[in-house]
Image (cartoon, rainbow, N blue to C red; front, side, top):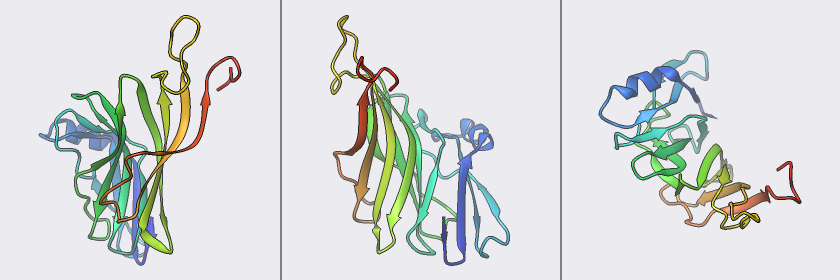
Length: 190
């Protein structure tokens, strides 16, 4: 993400994983670097501040966006191993992407029946307080697609989106389904 002279690049980072495994907070597979000189040089910053629980995980595939040169956002796949929750987190920076606050969970689903993956984020250039985060929901609950003749849940694969209109302070509680398909006989290649 690039706003003004500030640039933030986020990536999967095994070095961050090792560093956070030894710490008292959550584990992070995310790393990032920032530039304050229009990408002439970058500083490796390590991991964004991981979660507060020892069994929480930022699982990588981060996406970055900025509202202005001071405000950057980083979304990541997220998991709470204690409570069996899979989802997406959002971390905010108010210093041009040099540091990020601890992540807030913006999508949370039962890890017993879902796996949330591949987040992506965009801000409305006309109103940067409007944040859109999409992700893939691998849904094995059977709640949408039902069950097969043996009573097994039919998998549902969906692209969903959550939105914020207040700069990431809050997100709507019900995601918008962008597209979905049930992996049943009518869609065997789902």
